[in-house]
Image 1 (cartoon, rainbow, N blue to C red):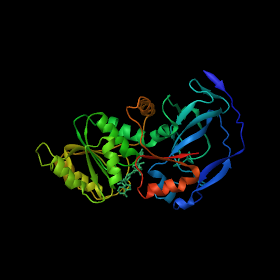
Image 2 (image 1 turned 90 degrees about the vertical axis):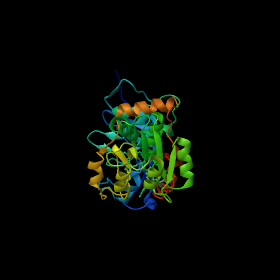
Image 3 (image 1 turned 180 degrees about the vertical axis):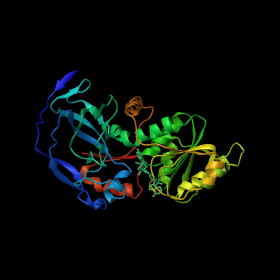
Image 4 (image 1 turned 90 degrees about the horizontal axis):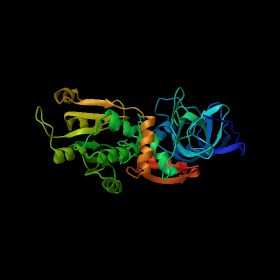
Length: 348
Ligand SMILES: NC(=O)c1ccc[n+]([C@@H]2O[C@H](COP(=O)([O-])OP(=O)(O)OC[C@H]3O[C@@H](n4cnc5c(N)ncnc54)[C@H](OP(=O)(O)O)[C@@H]3O)[C@@H](O)[C@H]2O)c1
């Protein structure tokens, strides 16, 4: 076990993207903030890439119900290099200069970008236990795409949903970070995938990702498309519908999803982008013996496995764009306007 005590050799102020109150992307500013001093058990990481997620516009708008610690910084995901260790930080696996990904969930404190100011800053202090080494061949942007979105998708599809080869899987809102990974994972196990998104350019990207069928929700109804493609589920008769529906959209898609979920089908959810208290239709749940499966967060083992998949290129995170911190407002606006495919990355 190595023991290190580090002292930072740099200016006392560092840059971060901050917002002081709830609002829109115009609230985001690049500001100088205090240089993070690593406490006992902590390390400081020079952030090379930070990842935006679907919850960042919600945190900025103040629509989540979570209490935001102002001044707040967006982004939950980060990848970079270790620059220092705090006093009495013991680690057997890390040294200064190592390339690391940050596990955003800190036991007892919550999550970066939610209850802890986020990762879109030049330097960040975090418990050394939250740092995961990045294997060779995986860039910082790919690594910063993984934790929240890809980590959650992996746990939801594998551990909770047990999605298997040959199953018919419908992924709603498949163009976002979680959705792209769900499509990639479903194809990886040999499922037949129908993916929804808005806009022809995004549908083209979904096809490239392996989706067998695509639905443009701007002009098409996914209920009709499932019935046309896989048939209508019929009471006590096998066949018809989707065996699995990934639905973190909620809102008006919820009850409609139940209509095309197969006999014995599973609906997986990890969020509610379009509304968390939608009407439902319980008749479908009992008649067709459907199961609703919730999934929250990721595992460390899952993050490590995703890094290995990225290294051997068997599952490469989809990066939409890489932008400077100064353009954080542009990236946030794009996310709100639903003009993103995959993960939006900021480069501090
Ligand atoms: N519980 C957890 O641990 C956890 C972890 C990560 C994420 N989540 C949740 O999972 C969801 C997806 O996260 P994400 O980061 O992948 O988000 P994202 O990148 O913003 O993707 C969401 C996708 O949903 C579609 N969409 C956006 N707003 C919509 C609306 N009002 N109505 C219908 N569709 C809409 C968009 O696709 P189109 O414009 O192409 O339709 C977008 O690409 C969010 O609700 C997030 O809070 C939960």
